Length: 127
Image (cartoon, rainbow, N blue to C red):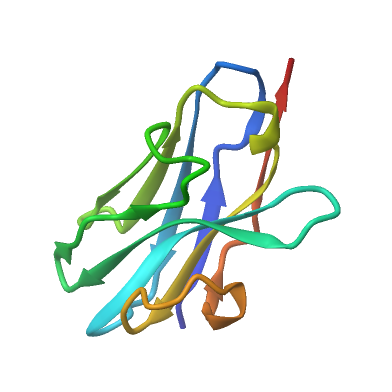
């Protein structure tokens, strides 16, 4: 049974930084996809970033244009943890952030294709 527990959200002023973390318990064998989605108030869940993983091999991540250059994913295989470093935060980055995972390659950006979800951690960016 795979479980994702995400944390690290909070309130920050525009231009600030936050680091989200996601602890993964259980195993996804073979190639799988890990990453992050977010959901702004009153909107659908949007893809933020994902990366392909196969055993201890982590492939380069892909990022939504809206966060490219500001957000960076990293991971520690030994700690079964991944992080999302968010810099230069904007008001439009406000929302609930979810750690996600699925078996198979990162060949989709649809939230419905992801099997495993963290409980979400809230990020609020104010002016």
